[in-house]
Image 1 (cartoon, rainbow, N blue to C red):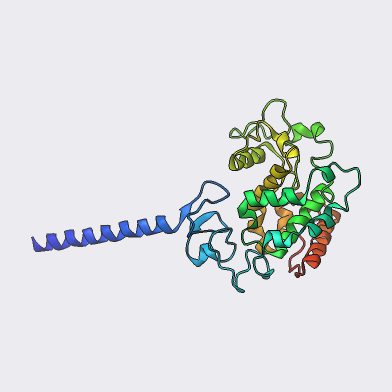
Image 2 (cartoon, rainbow, N blue to C red):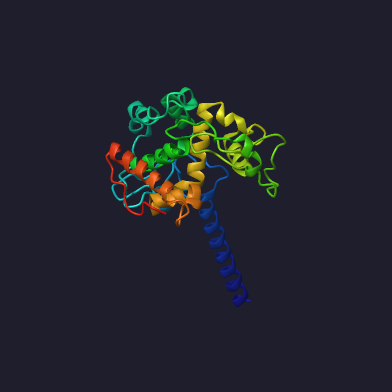
Length: 285
């Protein structure tokens, strides 16, 4: 009888321990359902999109919350790239205009993209600017420059003629709406029905039904670019700028289009110089 009691007691103790451990795990590491993370105020949003309070969440790559910003934290940038900086304090009107002023005079983008729209979008989509470094800012604008030719284009050249090329008919979660084209639009040229669907879901915009909104609202256009960056590109940045090229257009890599890769790297080096930061290693893909 005593042995049975001791066995029961041990089982109760083990069950209590496992239950307590499960509760702790659930409280410390909570998955999120949106790109903005939505953690409690005292939790960090990790580079993988989860909430927590340990160094794995608040250290390298931390997106938002009480992120650690000491000298040993590189915020997801290869070789350090400097500490996190203020996005608004770094992307000044002078820096922004030094890019768009290189676009041709008759560009639609000159009447569309603006520093004010960029900052308004960043204030709305806060996870983009959270714990960002000068090196990552340079990388983002290097790709924007290439994708839009110095923010000249709002949408892809001959986009309507290519509409059918950007419809993944096998994607049943985000099916193409009749008469709508999912060709490139915005600073990063958001493309494909599944990207419009996912982006719209996270931004609370029905972009699957109205993809043209990205080319009509400059704040939304930048938010769509931020969404693509934080969803598909940022997690690769700790491998160097070359990894971001592969994330945006991998067909250019491995000799696919070496001239285009070289242009992206040229823009990146230029913007790193303007922001006073070294470009780091692994620039090519």
